[in-house]
Image (cartoon, rainbow, N blue to C red; front, side):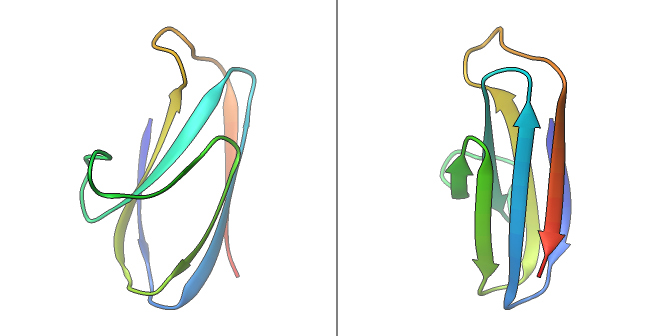
Length: 78
């Protein structure tokens, strides 16, 4: 799953993932391609302070190709 959002400059953000499968999140800036443009990658929590604003993409996927299931994501801007 891919989520797209715009973040203003200097904004701290927390992303938390709760999944019933082995999941990973990748945060990418300015491109819907996580390869080479990744900002952060983590299994359950990303904290990012956006020095530059712009369009970001959040990818949520299973660690292994056939891993999937229910999940919830919470995003908060502090």
